[in-house]
Amino acid sequence: MDIAKTIRSHNWWEPKLSPLLAIAYATAAIAGKSLISVTPWLLFLMAALIIGAVYVSVLNDITDIEEDLASGKTTPMASIPAKWRWSFPAFFLSGGFLFIYLLYPDI
View (spheres, helix red, strand yellow):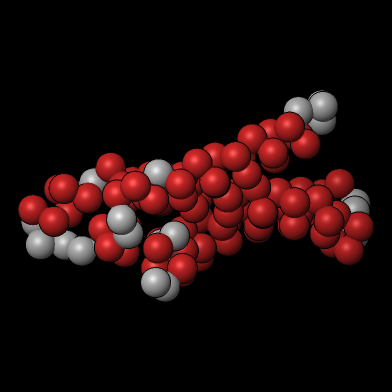
C-alpha cells in the first residue's frame, strides 16, 4: 500500500498549501517578524492543515468507493478491507481534535 496515494497528497500539497504558506510569509513580513522566529508556529499550522487535508481525502475515498468502482475508477482505499477503512479517518480526526485542543486557548 502506497501511503502517498492513499492520502492523495498529490491533490492538495501544491495547489492548496503553497498559497497558504505565501500568506503566512507575507503576514510575518508585515508584522516585522523574522521567518526564523515564526517557523515553529508555521510548522504547527502546516501539520494541522495536513491532518485536515488527509482526513478529507480519506473520507472522500471511503464514501465514494461504490461510485468509483461503478465508473471503473479504483482507489487505494477500495483495496483495504472494509473493517479497517474507517480506522483511517478516525485516526486523522483524533489528530485534528488534538490540534483543536492545542489551538483552543489561542486568541
